[in-house]
Image (tube, rainbow, N blue to C red; front, side, top):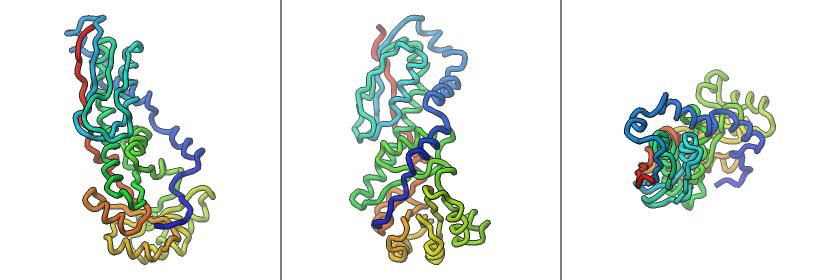
Length: 297
């Protein structure tokens, strides 16, 4: 592992500026409820008398890491400001199936908010759980598991938080808080070295410059041009080890492409610093959660 300056985490002010973009939790909940409830829940309003209150429980049906509990709570509060939401399990810890929360309030409101609340909780917990599985797989290597920008539009802030709750780390939040030179940029610039030199000349001092390399020759170009980070794209274990020897701590190395739970440990053992996994946010299966009404009050 390299001992050079850690350039993954951006200055606080820049990160906070980035995170103000996209949908806040309140906005996402409002959109979700508006989309799902529409002009009103015809079923609940037909079957459940007005004014009936109830107690319901939210359960986690499979093992995993919870995330999105605050989002679920807000869904119920938006439709019933007097609702009581009692958390029965912590976020960010691996746990067996069991009770997540109890909800007490207007029965119509609880049923109307149920699906949006569970969608948020299940989706975000699924991301946290998959991240935790990757983090467990590389335990003891010192390698960090990173997410990518392959997030659901509008959900990035919440999905990135879920990655952190699963033990992972966030890569750049958006296009304006770091420079990551990809294949198309290299093509338009005329080569890896020229692309890095242009970026290096234009980048503010607090912005790291990373470049994607597909061969060891490109890695040499990137080093010569002054890249802070090098993304090793779809390289096999032998080539990754060769890149680690070549770089010798002069830049931070990130392995990416084709990473699965089956091969992530082998990749980590090559000596790279980070492994980015797009699947954390674009392919994580939702954690199975449910809401069950216990009784009317």
